[in-house]
Image 1: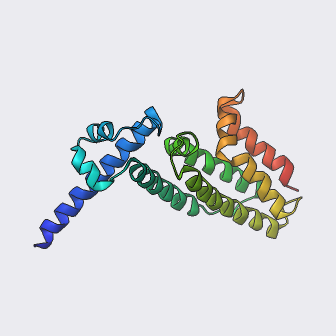
Image 2: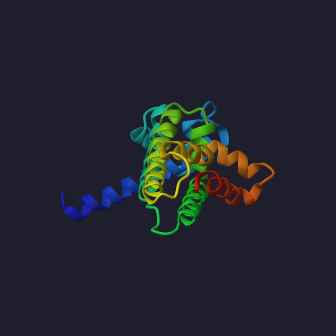
Image 3: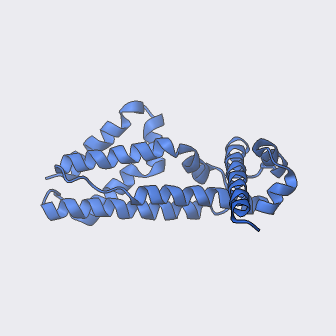
Length: 195
């Protein structure tokens, strides 16, 4: 088979897989895992049911593939963050701002991991949480090397991790703080961690 034909087929297969993934996540968000029907996913994706079965033979395989792919992409995005070479307060502000941007842009996936009841969602959320904890530990270790922390780095990382965890963040944004939540979280971190 000619290379350009293979490439075109591979591109079409990837576009179909992405359409199925988006449709699965959308239906999962609307209906939840228990009420998810593969026929509805196929219709939303614009593919035949047999095409959907070629990509994912079961509902569990479909959901875990869709959530897994998005969670891995989110974890890679989180891993790339580097603390800025600035003042300690600016590092904490940037850490909070980075979490805010990440949570806002990937809110749908995080909500599905927390609330959908999909199999494997908890494990994916825990693995993403480990990546976030490593990022926070890296930032706190840098601040500790500068002598900017008033507590031990592991305690600073634990507090920052608790304040920046997605369930805490969601509660802060939907509670009375609303849009001020990121600024309040940054103030809490600065006042409790910095010397």
